[in-house]
Length: 524
RNA sequence: GGCCCCAUCGUCUAGCGGUCCAGGACUCCGGCCUUUCACGCCGGCAACACGGGUUCGAGUCCCGUUGGGGUCACCA
Image (cartoon, rainbow, N blue to C red):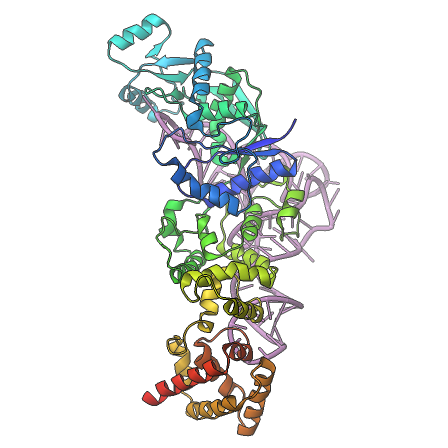
């Protein structure tokens, strides 16, 4: 039997990080077993703009390299892959269940039902619906209808016995049928509910393994009941632990951004992302710009490989030492029996560590491709960037080494290479410390400027030599001049090697920046 | 509240009865490297929730307690 898994998101307009983890495991499991991964859209809720609400989800999955074998855009033998287009199948299933006496028309009003529910609220017993408004015969239906009542279709759940599920990650789980309610499978308006649709589709699409998040575990009995009632062979079930909030065990939720911001690491991640986002002028409202949403990472310039690697390890592990996985290794090693049962907290720091690690291994040419769009979008370089700027960027990336950890960092780290000499911004604190405060700073800077102006070679090695000669002849420590020069030329207290910066900037620009700093100093 | 799930360093985890005075990774803290910031390297802090069993022997099995979480819709 070929393994077939599915991920069935609702078109909500965004791709949740927890959802992606589920999708990833489904995909990994299918692909690791030469099976197929199906994407199905759970849009029974029927919204106006399904395509708009779907795009971020499809884009996100594709960006991460979680490609589906069947589903929207690619089709497949079991289409359509939108539940809103499969209602005929659901109706057939409802009729079948009705005929078999496993479902019934119920004419209770919501209020009447609520009264019954409330009556059991303080009782220790489960809530068994009295079925007072169950229509057993056509006469019953007619009678209720003359009373002006409308009906829904409910499952007629067993009131005794128990269900045993052998879950692939949780093991044996038992449920008492009597605790299950008579769930609605078809609304009064004729539309069908998720559980019915899901079970029917899973069967029709020959899904062999239902892999989903833990919160669905308690929903499983009713689905099993439907499946069995329809004579389906049951799929295997695997209920994954959910992804928890940073610093707690609650399910990660998009809505609680404000709360997560109180977590230092999380706040830092958002702040860092926000700086990049603002530099490229994109919206940073929490609705769209939020680390709980996958798009955040794409916009800031994280690597999909890093996200995938991190997510894979959230609830799964290979052994006691391997953590660094490429897509290939993941595919070769993934298995459901090594999935953990406890929820795993989302840790921004650890995600960053994976990003650093993966980014380090990206060759310069590739980094160039990733970073250039950020510069173009920021307006720091023209679009499309002319050849000489691309060449300059390549050098910058080269000399930046491992300092740049996310593609978007190029804007925070190396913007000074592209800003005009007269508008480059200084780190004011550093300017004070290195230029204004030391009594001899201005004088040393002036002398060093003369040396630079006279320099014939302007490559990093020559400049370093020049600097050392300068230090020697002035009889000063290198720290007395080099920090000042860095601030004057880059405006920052961090960055690539000093001499690389000078060399890339070029003599003219370096001198201009020194002149500007001197003006500021004398103006004070 | 009922039902269900879960429980090893701050975090992610390894551990499937003895090789565990519990291993790795991230974080954090020292140190080295160094013109900055990173990287890298070296070192350190730090955990089996509790209580009963079973067993010659329990982080590992069973029961209970506690704690955490999920779920109880004409949402998905």
